Length: 375
Image (cartoon, rainbow, N blue to C red; front, side, top):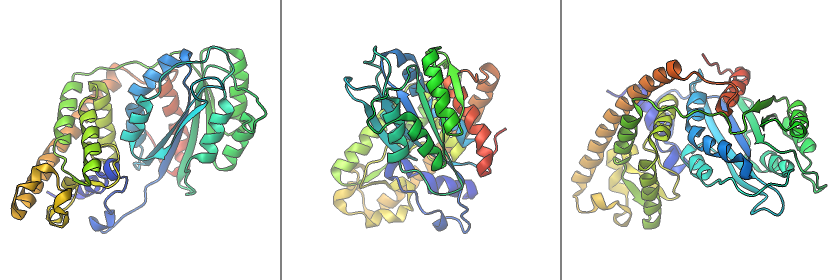
């Protein structure tokens, strides 16, 4: 039966594929803008940060899932800056804020801990680029936060990237900046406390490895398999090269480890997004996320191979059948994700001295400013 949740899922399921959701007004007579949370992670990616970086890769979906459980459910955009110092392979590597968390996950996988060994690091440039270059929202119903995470103090080159000045500029734009020190270096503590104090944020100390625990549950393997099955219901239409990119992304999704796949499914269940969404490929759309009759308007050359040898009527029928199959699988996934959440809450309570726990503590404490509450 078509209900309000179905409408929400349909309106959001193309976010990961095209970056543009189906207009909610076309599916429901009432559309209320949701509050938004924007989070940028500014991460030291030098060699000593290997434990934190690898842990963040595993926990990014878990963090997103927990943020999505606010009431009302907030929209979420995430950005990344990896930083090192002059003389390393790069000083910064930046990925703008996006609501496509598949893309965030993909970019985060590309971060490797390497270099460094000669503290300080160029914290100021990384922080400055996050403040200056990211596409922060001007909407007052947006909670804007940066988490600077590292184990070494900032460089001071006199090159326009002074960390104190960029902390001040950040809060002037309504961006709260939290500084997370990994380990116990006292010089890093002094600088990171300054950053937090200047920008209405918190200074946080966590274990050098990030303190994140892997949480395997009896539901992970089944969730991963259902996620794979949902991904297989996609029919991508568009230019050949765009379709191939979407198919590559779909295969990568199927290869995700069980815990990450389960956390990703938890985010989809909490936010109303479709678990079938793959990383964005410009010029491609998933026909299963649209009205079946719309397949008739797709040029023959842009059809996926699975539809080309079918008649017009058969194409519509196939899309409709895949939609029905996806709906059943997504309902199953929501139930499994709920069971998994209940298992984790009992077996592995969240630790505030871990990276993911520290992030969620700050999000929960500040979210009331935009009318979002957490249990």
